[in-house]
Length: 372
Image 1 (tube, rainbow, N blue to C red):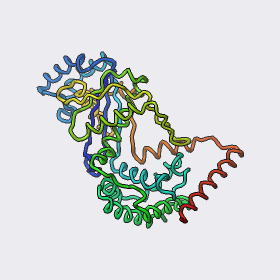
Image 2: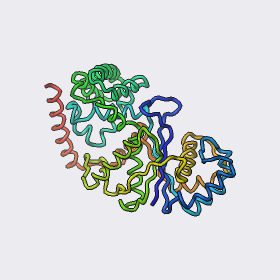
Image 3: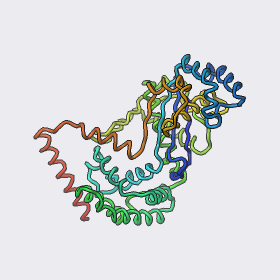
């Protein structure tokens, strides 16, 4: 299979651009090489519009309607599939804060159950409720601050402000655990290892690379075999291609490692990560990248609740039936995990007794750590 990867909404480390709150990755896959086989129809479409490249943001709905026959023929003949992966950038700042401050391996005020089971998403949702945009922005700036002293000072201040808001949480247990966690981090900021240590490390935690993890797992899910990806073409850009390449190589080298997390949490399976190296190509040199740009722009309009011209149905509707859309955001995580937790079967008396035994042990350990 052949894969073509493009992104939109790129703002680098600036997560709070009101005009681009979402980073979108689009992946177009096909069993044939679109760069070669779809080229004649794409050239005809360019000629019809009088452009050197199909860039949907420039030609808009009007231009796409004019070339819908060419695009529909490519869709029908080569049957490509479009997948969309999204990262809500302001939410990413809060998720990063949670992943560092509430990491039970660094913060002993966090219970094992509260971090290594689906309960982590319950606490993440409640913590997110305490943030406003300004505090999220400060948390992110501290996260990418390379100077340890400055980052730790800001982390203390942020935890202090959040502690002043914990009382608004509706249940006592959340107030207790989240309050204890923030208090310990405020008192021991140097032990949280909150900030990045280099500009290179900063790149690895940006939405661009978090979203690219989605892309790699999505490709693995499409192929079901690490050798079935013949070529993976990624839009060339200077800032993140090296980090994308490093991520792909890490996944390739770790495909046989068992990535167990915790009970009830998804296991990361790298066994089908494609062996094909990434090919970084300029958008002007790849027909496949031109086509994924079109689909990405169209589906961004759909996600933004824009009304599409009905003439574009032949290229949009097939993807609505078989394409995958996934998202990293507080709302998406809350929706997914609240449903999973609510649908759990009622435990037996024996299971309840065992759970109480485990939670009592975990709470005793937590309380002991707080008192030290």
